[in-house]
Image 1 (cartoon, one colour):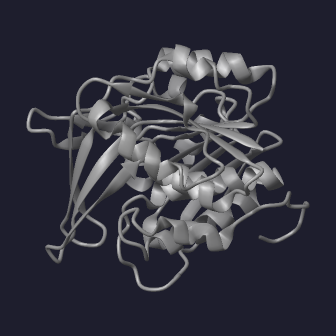
Image 2 (cartoon, helix red, strand yellow):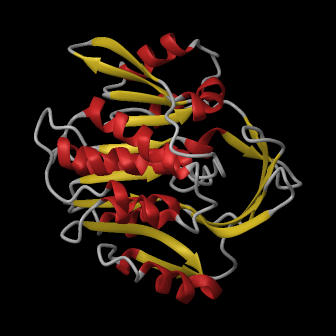
Length: 312
């Protein structure tokens, strides 16, 4: 199985509420490390994004510890890599600041890596790809029925003059969510995305009417809600959060949820079971600081295809 991953890398500086500080790779690295830990050595992960020239060699060296990541789609650009400062007031509330956001990943870079079984687009910075690039991607994979999963993530975030991120609606949200396998967002992102300020049920029905099969709204320690289009009817599934040891750091849990879902779906082709699996893996990530110990997620590894009805 092969999965293509598109989104921005960032260097995270996490300022914990207890005044401790964690520095680690963030952004798309959470997606890559999770996929590499969950998928087997016969699977291939194809990342496509740029890295600042001064950070490129060290980052490629870090990825070489994963035998199933093909780094040929990672390119250098002049200037620094995006740095994100996350200032936690408590376990659930934080202020985010971004510096040096990279240019969107060009379509010509992505196009070469679409002989794949699935595409994960993670909007780490909110400027990772343009809407025109996403449209081109969907058109390219449509006839091959390659599923495209999008983590909305920072698409709802504007950026102020002092680098602080803030939620604001996305006027073209319908076009962004059109013809996806699934879209994922957290509660705050779902509330901010639409100028119409729909309630969740109305929003989900509108999103699924765009030929998107599933919408996932993640709720941190409270779990997630899945809205699934089944025979033109919207089915809602609510699953509570899971305790996988003490919560240490919620940073990256949404990225892990998306990657874990994609890994499981590649093997099972089952939306419901894959979402439940992602919930468990994301809960385990909450017990790990930054991305420093993310390889511990390998305890959930999925090396063989999962038969329908089989638990994982």
